[in-house]
Length: 438
Ligand code: ADP
Ligand code: ASP
Ligand code: MG
Image 1 (tube, rainbow, N blue to C red):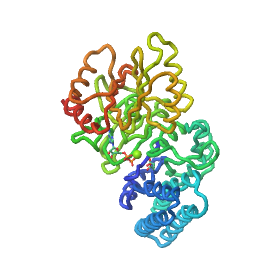
Image 2: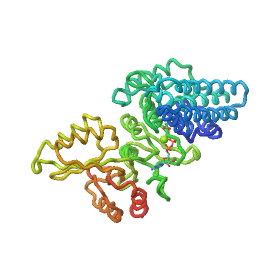
Image 3: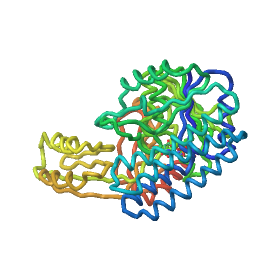
C-alpha cells in the first residue's frame, strides 16, 4: 500500500481539500497522512506561547479567531446538514480541549497537546468529507502507533507493531487517513516530531507497513536545485539519491523535514515529491540510484553557532579532540561542521540549549570563542574523490563571499561552507549564477 502525505497548503482551504480528495480517490488502497491546514500550527504555537507568558486574554483571542475560521470551513466543506452538524461538533470538541488549558498551570504537556490539535482537526474533517462523498474511508489515530523514545528518536519497532495492529483492527477500507507530526513520547504523553514533521511521519509509516512508495505532496513541483524563497530561476531536479536528498534535507531544504529520508533509505522505499496543484508533473524521485556525477543542488541551514577552541597545551596534544567531543556528547548536542588545525578546532552546532554549560567546560581545555547568526550553505551532489574540479568550482563561484569555515571530504555528497547569515541570500545566488546555472 502506498503512503501519500499532503502538506499544509495542500489541505489549506476547502477547495484544496476537495482537490486532494479527487486526487486520492482512484480506487487504489492507500494510507494518507495529513498536516494541519496551513497557518494552523503557527496559531497553535502562538496560543501556547501566550499561555506560557500567562497572557490568557491574548491566547483566548487567537483561539476564538481560529475557531471561527474552522466553523466557516465546515459550513462550505460539506453539502448535507447532517455532515455540517457533525463537522461543527468535531471542531467544538477540539476547541474545548484547547480552551481547557486557559485555566490552571500551563505545562509542556499542555503545550504539546495544543500544538497537536491542527492535525487532529484536518484529518477528522477530511475523513468526513471522504465519507460524505461515498468513499470507503477509515480514520486512524496516529497516537495509537506513532512513538518516540526517551532520546526523541522514532521508535520504529513500536510503530511497526502498533500500526499493523491498528490496520488489522479497523474496518477494511480503500483510504486510511491519519495525522502527520503528532506522536506519543517515552512517558506516553502527547508530543511531536518537530515542525514540518509530517514528512517524517510518512516515511516512518511507509517503512512500518513495507510500502512500495511514499509520496510527499506539497505546493511546489519537486526538489529544486536551490531555495526558491531566496533565489529566482531555481530548477526542479528529476531524480536524487537517498544520500543526496538526506544531506539537502538535513542542511535546510524546507521541502523535506530533516529526518525524512532515513526510514525510506533503510528499507529502500522510493520517495516521490509531487505538486498537489499540478499532479500531472512527475515531480522528483528519490531512490538508492545516483542520477550521475556532479553538483546537483544547494541548501542553507540558519541559526548556526560556531565555537572555536584553541588548546592551551599546543603541539602534539593527543586526546584534545576526544575531551572536546565528550562535552558535546554529555550535553546531547550534535555537531554539524568541524574543522581542525594543529592547535585549534572550530565546530558548529544548531542546538544552543546547553551552550553556556558547554562553553564553561570547554574553557578547561583552551580559549573559547563563540560566533552566532551564521548559516551553513551545503552544496550537494555525487562528488567522487577521483574527479577534480568540484571544490575549485565552488570556491570560484564564491570568490566574493567571506567564508568562515569549510567542510569537504566528510562524505562524497557534500561540501559545506559557513557564512554570516546576512550573506546567505548573496551566497545562494552566487552559487546559482556561477555554478548551478552556469
Ligand atoms: P508542506 O506544507 O507541504 O510541508 P513546506 O512549506 O514545508 O510544504 O515545503 C515546501 C516549500 O519548501 C516550498 O514551497 C519552497 O518554498 C520550500 N523550499 C525550500 N527549499 C526548497 C527546495 N530546494 N526545493 C523545493 N522547495 C523548497
Ligand atoms: N503542522 C506541522 C507544522 O506546521 C507539521 C507539518 O506541517 O509537517 O510544522
Ligand atoms: Mg513541510
